[in-house]
Amino acid sequence: MDLAENIIILIFIALTGLCIGSFLNVVILRTLSGESIVFPPSKCPKCGNKLKWWHNIPVISYIFLGGKCGFCKEKISIQYPVVELITCIVFVLSYIRLGLTFDLLFALVYFSLLIVIAGTDIKEKVVYDLHTHSLVIIGLLYSIILTGLDMYGSYQLFGTIYLGNSWFQTVPVIQSLLGLITGAAVMELAARLGYPIAGNRAFGEGDTYIAAGIGALFGWRGVLLILAVSVGVQVLLTLPVFFKKLYDKKEFKTLVSLALFLIIAIIYGTAQYFGLSDNIIIYLAAAILLAATGLYACKQIITGLKNPEEQTYLPFGPAMVIATFLVYFFCKYSPFPF
Image (tube, rainbow, N blue to C red; front, top):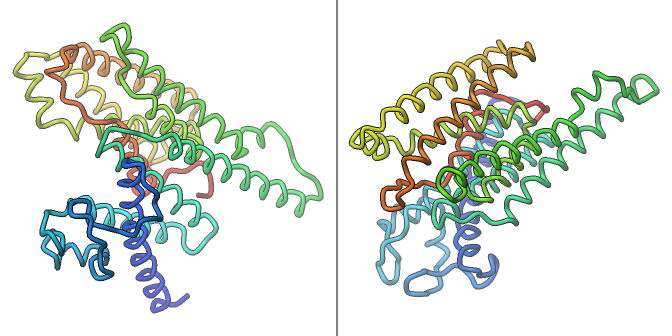
């Protein structure tokens, strides 16, 4: 493929991402409102007027309408262009990494679901089973297809299907199942730590399903890395207000535990990136240390936020989604060809 063809395809992928992003906005808003995502046609949520086609051009319509409805002049949520642009960027990065392949189709569907999950969680702090269960199904389905292709390739080359110990350690479907279990178990353990400390879950049940869906695609090593990065992302998102509250209340133990966790997470991620964690014993020891500091930081946070009036709450789902994109696109981590 020459440069001109590649540029044309890249532009097509970008435009497709913008259009799909517009559709994802509909999915987010109508899932929350309980409406069909197909009917009725797009309308202004304030005045109810049916939108013209030129009102629905991704990003461009928002700019030329000045961020206001073309009928009632009510302000349009910034969510619309933001989701469209994020989807466009994700589609372009996916194409750059995967090209026009079978893997790209799975990536675009999977990442679109992640964007929807983050959207509903940010907007109403709600995660829907349909979306999270679909993540799990896509991850398992992808691993099953890869496993079948591996077995078929082995049979074509050697006339038999190899099922030795090394095969079982690397077979995609087993990695997927281990990742699913690991993601769900780690998040559920962290969530249940809230009961003895604050009398309620530290994280919602939806977060457990999100972690399971991430593990189903990225395997147990991948989901551990993504969850570690998620905590760092969550901390960064809440830093301005949360750290000020901790300092004002002189909660220095919490501040130190968070700083320690971030340092270890950075070292852990760097080791992953440069392939310095191939030794399974060192890898597990580092993972345990990272988990221990993370859980201690969570304990300190939950203990310091027993009073609901003092809580600075942001849903954890979006942090996991952001971390997934960071790990996949910038650390380029994946246990599978995907």
